[in-house]
Length: 258
Image 1 (spheres, rainbow, N blue to C red):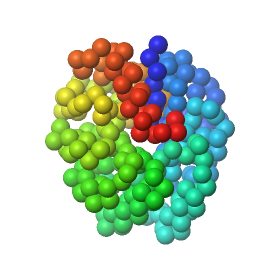
Image 2: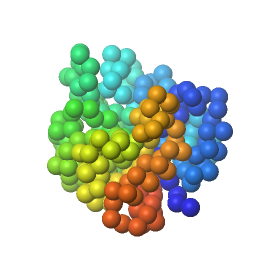
Image 3: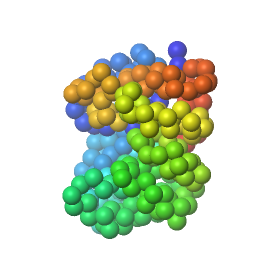
Image 4: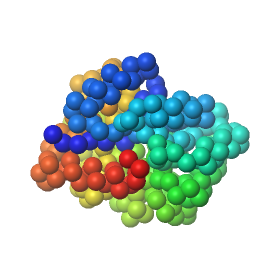
């Protein structure tokens, strides 16, 4: 059976709350060995760390998500740094951080300040980053080039162009492959994932968000990373076992403590 790591799952949200052990067991049945749990705001840090320390297969990332920029203050950054200063084998990345132009009032200048501050922390603590980017790929790439992180990271839930993906890869970043590719109408994203170097890809669900085709209206789940993988195998020329093992090793290399 193939080995999987779900590199992006909000396991601290419903429907997983109070059902963590059973959810991890369901994921393990399809080959999911580890799940990376990114925080979205400072109020979640303690819960995310506690979950990772309680369950063998869970690992934590701490970060301040741009979609709730109005909740982030200088004190939140201080809280993030104080957590990073306490070494933990279960804290493997900074995330979910990034840029987002989806909202009517994105407070984009504040988003950029918060992103740069967190990239600086990633450089200081030599941790990879989990990056959110919506309508901001080119702007995000400029920030990443300027910061030049030693451990790079992953652009999660990627749905940009092939040229944008290649720019991130040239900067040393991985590309997160999620449930979008399970939708036949998502031809652009499917074509991109078919053409990128296999060495640059990671698997993710973004559960409970980003439901796969056929599960619309239902919470996404980490065990469905196996279905993302199955779709990727339909799009790629390599044998399934090569795809699975390469992506597994890509993930282990980026998130060194997994």
